[in-house]
Figure 1 (cartoon, one colour):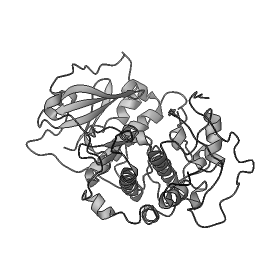
Figure 2: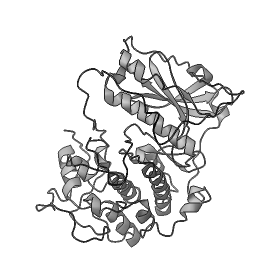
Figure 3: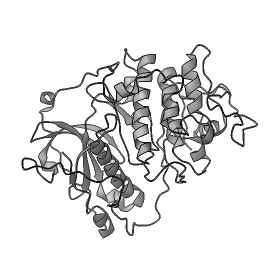
Length: 402
């Protein structure tokens, strides 16, 4: 149980008579309930995949019969393989239990990339190994299809102790920081939400659910457009009507059906969009609690409350996205019904997809010449034996897209 000293609840009790069946009204835009507010909430990352019991025996590499195939982007002037020696590392962009993300300049062209390094010794858990393989596969899909709002792969490669993903650089910060920008306003929230809708629509069209959509995983690139990132918890094969049961996500953004350990599908991603939209406009989460147990009870059984003066189109659409039962949730029947909802129905989605809509905020980012200082980084790991099964699973990990 996690405790947060800076959370408080105006109504400390969840609905005493929580609904135990889907809403009878077909309108997915209706919702009401007790008030839950917060100040300065902290996000608590969840270990939401069950830890693998024992050492991994064997994990197959991604199937060659997947719905997308690698494209040949090599030429006589470009290397068919890339290694860490091809990059000049100049800063640490992020760090976590997974490893580190470095700013790297590709020496051949001077172009900047984000290089995510993952420790092989951590991959004796099948979950972490599968996460690395999944992330590479979705990054490659985004690159192949050139989707403007998804982070794409440049190259994947290995060192003795690490696997590395060289990805599109989005140096404008994540949305948790962008919302503090003086020019961030209601229109900006709609703009970024619209981009997220298009990115999510693409993933769902390819039968992929993200399962960890949150403000932290949406970055701004130098031109002010978003890049959805962090695909390690994605799941493939999630077509219309397909359900899964493995828990995944981040507490404040997790859909009720996941917390109830019920089978779930694509609708969990639309719930997360509703949480992000609510936070961007109202600067607080729709549900909170004194601890994780209380938070989960509110997510499962309480209704988000909207101040009376918020725009009706915002409250209508967000209530639909936060419908408790997935079959009542806006987006259950696909992204098109989200795009036609009151908040988004006037958005020029074709123009947005082609980047013909001017972003509300252009981030101040350093140029390539500002990052010429070489960071002396040696990607050594603690001495450890990498199991043969891990090495075999990573056999086809190296890939150069360019």
